[in-house]
Image 1 (tube, helix red, strand yellow):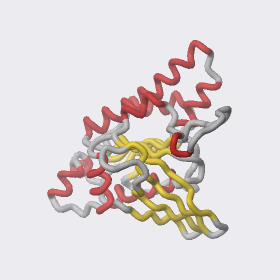
Image 2: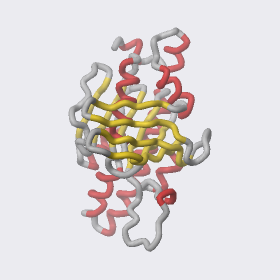
Image 3: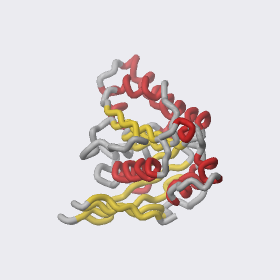
Length: 233
């Protein structure tokens, strides 16, 4: 991508009638220049959604910075507008986010597992610092969206119900409760159908400034032929 194009905001490109994807416009209208989170159990379409969104931005001529912490992707995205980084090391993730390049969309997929792994091996003295670093990562992303007029997507896991007598599916929340206040929109992913030929997932509003909880936003269908995401907003 031409450097002059990289420096332009999404709004500027739309005003200049650049071929920006309709879903990019819809995501921008939902989130604005801010951070949002998608959380849910393993296999519920989070990474499929993140990769699909990355390509939607990239095909629109927008720069994407994608950090993969779990090697969830069957193959790394290969597009000139997507900068892909893989590291499972929490301290490396922290340092990357402290020095983010200019982009239109930042994605961390995902943040919960590296934090928990680092937390588990930390001393009692270090554990509080680990959780604060998770909040700091969310804050750095928020700063980047503000400075670069960009969006940031954080993929996360729900808090474990282990050891609790009764937990409602709707009450499960993402890890790192303090970091939640830094996300403008929080979306919950669900598995609604599985078979040998396909998995269908839904992404619904969990905490939103625009929709009520449970509003269906996206439907994700995963098959051997690939991923199809249907926007419903």
